[in-house]
Amino acid sequence: MENSGKLLIIINGKGGVGKDTLCGFAAKHYQARNVSSITPIKGIAAANGWNGEKTPKARKFLADLKEAFTQYNDLPTNYLLGQYQDFLAGNEQLMFAHIREGSEIDKLKQRVTGPVITLLVRCSCRQLKNWGNSSDDQVEQYPYDWIYDNSKPLKEAEEDFLAFLKEVLKEVGNK
Image (cartoon, rainbow, N blue to C red; front, side, top):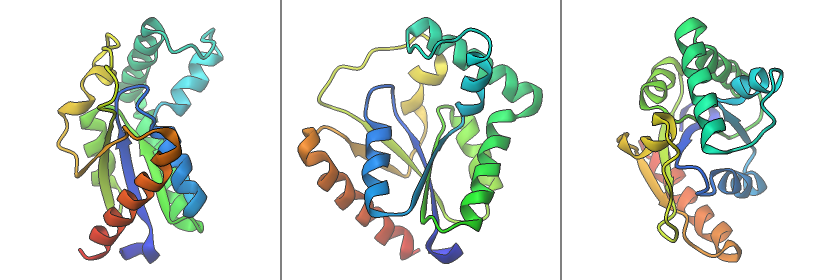
């Protein structure tokens, strides 16, 4: 891999599929940064009454607020680009960037300088509901580079995901 072995992994998946859990597993074995394009939006929402709930109404509110800031000053992408610059300057090997919208995924991919892949996390073991907003409900419409099915029991999931990640890193390193 270029950039001294650094890799940006844009990760996505419906709510509840275990994306943060998988990122946590990776962080046990690799120096990793885990960030989300919604983080600055959550800060603004929390300062104005949102209490952290993940109800359909709250998720739609966050998606709508993110869209407004994307149109106004591209806050979510600019936040991620700042995180990416810190990642490049630091010792981390992997950066996981959570982004829901396909157009926003493409925007970040076009603006970074190093290797980047996209990863969709699914969980075939459970029925996932629609949340009532396009950011959450259309995550599977994007053409991802990699798809991981997070359907193993938790005690087996870490080993399975790390084997998957090792294969991804091997493939990316050979390009």
